[in-house]
Structures are given as C-alpha cells and as structure tokens.
Amino acid sequence: MTHAHGSRIQSYIGDPISETPAVDRGQLQEIFKDIQADLRFDHELNGCLNCGICTATCPAAHYYDFSPREIVQLLWTENLEGIYDAMQEKIWACAQCYTCAARCPFENSPGGLIMIMRETAIKHGMKSAQDVLRPFSRVMLKLISTGNQLAPDMINPQHFADWGPNISKVDAPLKLLRQAIPMPTLNTTTTAWEVNLKTSVELYTIWEMTGVLKQLETIDENLFDVISDIMEEKREEWDEFVTEQKDD
Ligand code: SF4
Ligand code: SF4
Image 1: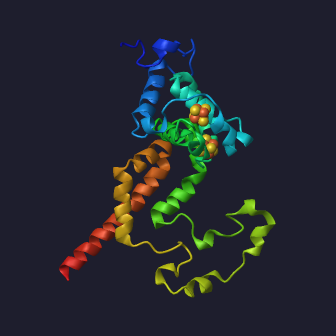
Image 2: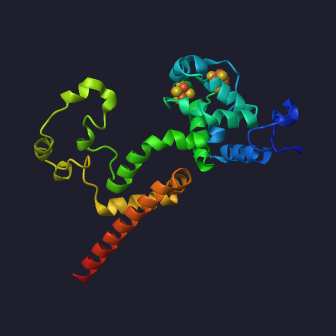
Image 3: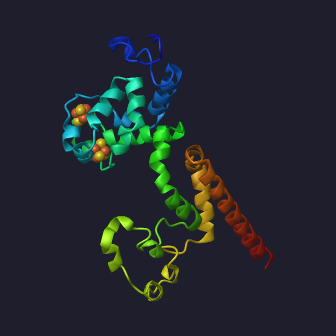
C-alpha cells in the first residue's frame, strides 16, 4: 500500500494535519518517524480501546490538563500535528509512575510512550525540553563532575528553600558525622561518596556511546562545553595515572 504522506493509518482515517501547522509537514513526519523508530515503541503500543482506564488511574491527570489516553490515541491514530502539540507541554506532566501500564487492558505503556516522546523532544531541541530540563543543569553538572547528584553539604537552607521553616531543623556537625562512617569513601561532605577516577572515565564513555552527551549538547550547549572541559581534565588525569603505573 502506498501512503501519500508516509503514515500507515492516515489512508484509512484521513489526514489530520491542518492547513496551518505550527511546523511544516516534513518536520512533523520526521518527529513521528523518530518516535516510531524507537525500539520500545512497538512493545509499548499494541492498540487502544480509548477506554480511559489509564487516565482514570493516572495521578498526573488529577492535577494537570493531561490525559495518557489522549496521548496514546494521538500515537495510535498517527495524528502528527496533535503529537507535536502534546510535546510542547503535556508530555512533561507525566510522573513516570507506570500505573497506566499496570492497568491497560491492551498492555500498552502510556508512560513508556511518553518517555520516548520526551527523548524525541530532546533530540529535536524543542523549547519545551529546554525549559523543563534547565533547572536540572546544576544536578547534571554535579553528577558529571563528581559522579553523585546530591551531596551532604547541599542539604542546607540555600538549596532547599522549598522546605520552608523545616530546613532550619537540619543542623548537624556534618563533617564530624561523615567521618564517623566506617567506609572511607563516605567520609566526604562535598559528594555523597567518592567516585573512583577510573569509574568516572568509564561513565563518560558510556554517556558518549549512548548519546546522553549528544542530547545534552542539543539542550544546553554552554553546559555541554563546561562538562566537556571537566571530562577532558579527568581523562588526562587518568592517562597520567596509567602512565605512572607503567613506569613504576
Ligand atoms: S492506552 Fe490502554 S487503558 Fe488507555 S485508553 Fe488505550 S486501551 Fe484504555
Ligand atoms: S506513568 Fe505517567 S501517564 Fe502513566 S499513570 Fe503515571 S503519571 Fe500517568
């Protein structure tokens, strides 16, 4: 069967793209192609009864203008324009709890499909992805530079203003307490534990090979540059250590 616009279902239900889509048809198709090409896609989407059980059990649907049923229907009917619209805001409301996946009679995973859409939004450098992920840049920097995302010294009033007055109750001789832990790798306050240099360098390779760093570059080029410098320094440090070992 041939399709005028490359979507297998549109020949049956008609073309849902309006006269004036937010981006051109080629881009809409490219985005959907990337979602559909994901290895998980066919596993997460088996059909959809439009029964709404997923939405009825979804915690995010109670608080936001968001419905997993709607997202699954957009994907199932290959509504390219609707998919693009949902990627501008709605997909970021999901809490990734997967209650929907446990309940769907078709064994779909709306939460899993939303994860694919999020990754595609990142790949395409969508503004929604940049806006949502910007607050995490500090965490990302910490994770890549130290191997941990949260350090004991971050639990202070400055970092946890949202705890309100309760944060003032967190007042302890942190350094002393950490030194009391029998494992030396936990005697630090600036990282949750000390990450071995070799492990850090191996993690960089994993992030490179799995496309994590490429995604970061798409979303935040400045952060990517800072992180690249840190990785380069640590790799040099590791190379020097290996050379020293050989010389000994
Ligand atoms: S994804 Fe599953 S639970 Fe949700 S509307 Fe479709 S068939 Fe029903
Ligand atoms: S994974 Fe997302 S869509 Fe599914 S129930 Fe949880 S919040 Fe709702």
